Length: 119
Image 1 (tube, rainbow, N blue to C red):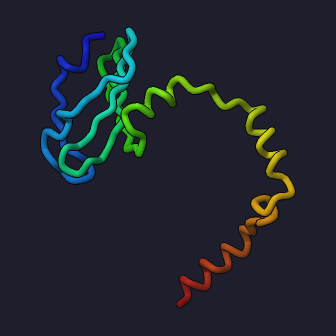
Image 2: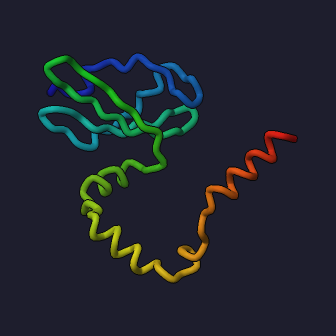
């Protein structure tokens, strides 16, 4: 895939509406099928992770507002995946703690919403 440097990003920052906000781009990872970049808006300092993917149908771009810094994006990509066993282990560790004792009662929540609507 050609580098994103050859692609002109004609957009505005979704947060502050600044035109040409994507001047501060860092490529985090590049493969044959796509490119992951981190962009910071120079005006409002909002950060975005952007995936540009190439397929037989053309090029697609997806962006996500993030609180991750540039260095953190790379670390997250390299981190071990969370498995189902990891989730079960955490559940077992939390069982019997204050967190697990607070039960969420959907019927109570529904009653509160109904009372608010009537007022």
